[in-house]
Length: 142
Image 1: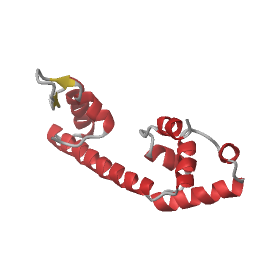
Image 2: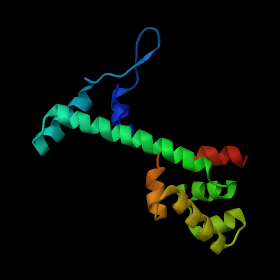
Image 3: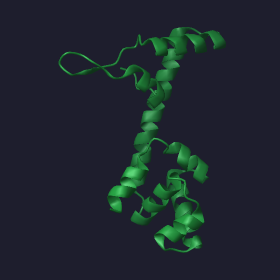
Image 4: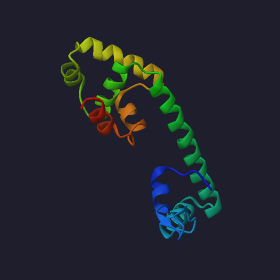
């Protein structure tokens, strides 16, 4: 089975057989159409395009695993700042919500950027866009 990016994986998932096991079908019509379209646009074979999709999915999977490890390396406060950033809060709002100063928020963000090897909140939000920070925040602060 190939490791595909979430969007492609969702195209393939959700079919279950009689014993309840999840099956992934490479012949899913939406994926086939997407592969054909890209192959046609780029003048490549469908096999080459699917292989590239699979490679991208593998890289994404490995990257997400790395991001999870980096999450564990953050302090509790850094995790809170990161979660609030990904929930769309601005620095001054984070400072107010966590009862810390604006410079302290900026310092935490610099540490987070360093640990994640990123340069901006935009990159951070993009890298962690599929993470369920609202659920995490609600559990932590209930």
